[in-house]
Image 1: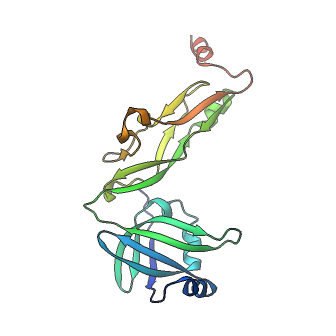
Image 2: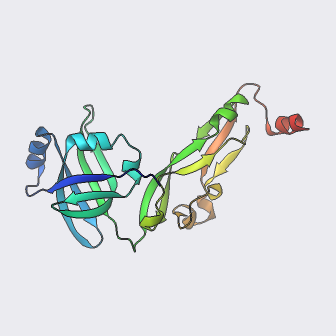
Image 3: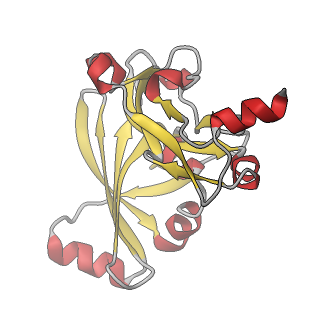
Length: 204
């Protein structure tokens, strides 16, 4: 887990609806909704400049966030972010409250390491997935899952069942059964790329 702190100030939004949201956006503010933990949904508003800066950090999408709302601190995760189709603008945010005793259902990114080693062997790493859907208690939430491909050669692949998930973290797909053991990454040979047999011969 990162030591970086993700704390943001929010205001309760009293006016809702399309017209009110448009006015907020003209004032460089972002409308948002906070729901979950068996509590009533709250309409919020954030400063657009804070959210634009926040969305540049990967942790904003995967870390447990602290929202300061009228003097109360609420822990939440980002569930959805809506952007303007062509302007560098965030138009809406969805947050879900965190309950320390209830499991989260979310997605975290995959970080691939060792691709340069595969490339030196004349092969290409093809990402079948870039994120993985997980469930875990809030305290076990990872910011990412690492996938080491450095020992792979052309023809190799890594599946969900081969990922090293942190303690207390489960794959949503694998929980559905063996038939859901998706391919995460495959390695394809470039022209004249060494195969696994070539690698074995070279090692002898």
